[in-house]
Length: 316
Image (cartoon, rainbow, N blue to C red):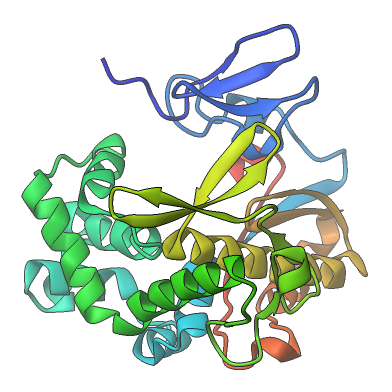
């Protein structure tokens, strides 16, 4: 029996919340990042979060920000341009997968698979893992079809696959004490004395005690974490820095929003300000302007957002 991915369970005296058998939260406070949105308890907790009398919540989400940052960082200019021109990149990807024109793509399963590919295959995911991921989201595909989809993605995004290889080389060189940056020139900086990559914001992505270990297919690289060691490779390193850059941008956008409206909470790539009812239209316009802004160092990055307003968070 498949366990629902979003079925979150309280599994201990210290509120150890587990989703799909994996620990997602370990504290005695609520983790707002993992409130259930699907399954029998979908949005029940979210709908319990509501604005005070006279106020409205605005949920503004940074659209596809990881996929946009990835394309920009890799120099995958055709995909970056598609985002900039507000083209349906999911239909375009589905058209390539199914060998049809984008305007012939249906919503399910074709566009759904295109969306899952754009959002899931950008960090060097393999066919078996992609098949599992798609199946968990309700679309059954064969192992051959999953691998073919991954192959189509890689063939049509050569700069992204090149970025994985460059990141792998950077990890290998860092372990030897050499400085080999990757990605768009001037965006990332290798900090050898810290075994880290400096993001444009100044924050460091650290790989403490980075070491090479012989494996079945050559050397594998690991770094120290609190509970042991984690593997690091090109695709994972790209994921780390892309997510870091995306979060830094959302953080700066949130600071801009907070100059006029109180931000009640932030979840992943979205922020939720609380505004007076009479200011909703004006507030949404201002918030969307802030969430469509990119820092000077991210020139050419096509940032966009979507927003909804409601009394209850679960209705946004």
